[in-house]
Length: 319
Image 1 (cartoon, helix red, strand yellow):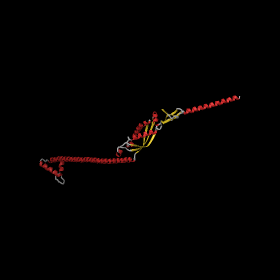
Image 2: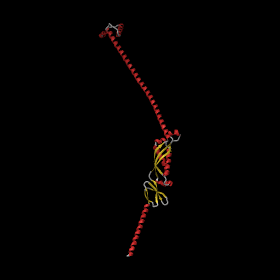
Image 3: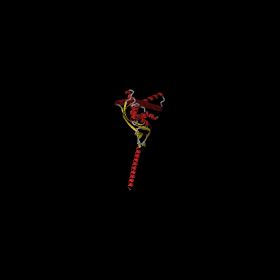
């Protein structure tokens, strides 16, 4: 009995020891498997990196997700999303224009600008970028961008910076697109924000604007004087035309009056002749001498203050 109990105890201990070993091995497997997975976020690209040797495998670019690499591996990461950069107080130079050429020769003027731009790394070219700059690519990209912006600023005049910002942004984007090819990246957009000119340039432009306004005012005065002179001349023409109409009306009225008077004289002469003929016939005057005397007497009778002893009214009425 004693020997059986001892043997049972030994077998139970062995089973417990074996269970512990199996549990430990299972735990070790779980730990190894879980540590063999490396994760990349949705906004990351990555290269596999061996931890023991620090060597990086650039043959494959990994995207977002959990990847079974092995316990001795991790990721060297790059941003997969759009990278935004704000470049403030950037000193640049403009192209010469009418406002700057007069005082600075053929050169433009200095300008201080704030610019924002966005870019994205090209996934298929990350191996080349890592070879050039490892993971420290941002200063490289920003230096290229600054030089591209400064170079393209010289293609635009100061007036463009004040009035045509959209064109400048397009020019900056084109220059940035070409420059970032060396950084294995693609430009997405450019925004021109603050634009600040030197105080001397601002003062000069204000003086030019005031002078332009004064010139416009002087031109307006000259045009106003010319219009007044033209108006006065037109007024005189109209007054002359009115005077002509008035004089023509007077002449026409006088002509009608004279014609009426002439017609009245003719009518009176005709009536007198008829009346004289009737008197001659009534008085039976045959002699021309007597007829002339009768005409003379009637003429005297028509005169004022003449007293006649012949009742011509009765004579004429009797005819």
